[in-house]
Image (cartoon, rainbow, N blue to C red; front, top):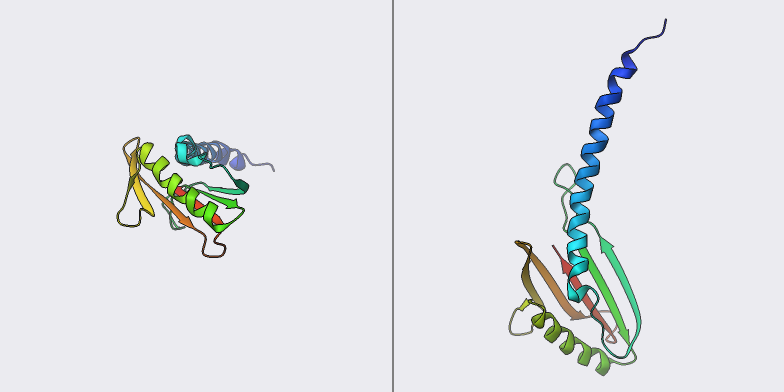
Length: 137
């Protein structure tokens, strides 16, 4: 004899999917906010290659939460070009509102829509010809 019990779970399933989807949209908003920052697309003359990774935020819950992050690696022909670009990137970050920490000016912060975000502008540990720019919120 057929039962209607499985149909009772259908509305519950729909509500759960809708709730999770709206939560994902909020997390995507963090990544979209980072994408709007000038340092997410800043570049320098002499870049011969760029890699980029974007990681959306994860919500609080059973899995530890994480911030939304954009990491860009800009490769130059030589170490001097990378060092010059690093100084230029720090100046560009300051001009776009980032407060760079003294004395090295390697890390910084600013408010994005009322939320604290951070930036790192450093050379790569693996290759002196690579400049790494990381922003997160």
